[in-house]
Image (cartoon, rainbow, N blue to C red):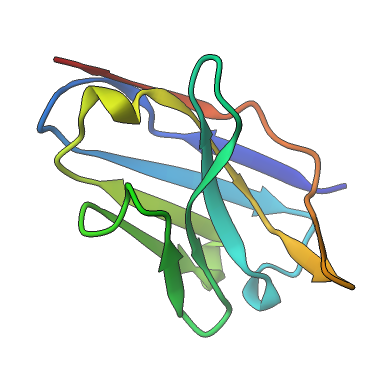
Length: 120
């Protein structure tokens, strides 16, 4: 059974930093693309950043230059370092391992996420 356990969220002032962690089990972590996503109140879930098995990264527009995704294959864990946070970053953050097949993207069951609240 796949488990995705996010942690590291909290309340931070604008301009501050947080480091999120996502521990996984039940998947062959090292071969999977891993992604961080977020969902703000009343909005759809969106991609924040993703990293492939070789370490290549891709960032959503709002994350570029401020967030850094990384992975530790030995620990089956993916991280998201978030700097210079703004109130617009307030959301629940999730990780997942997206798989694409015939043009469709599939996700494992989402975890509980970790809540990030940025005060102005």
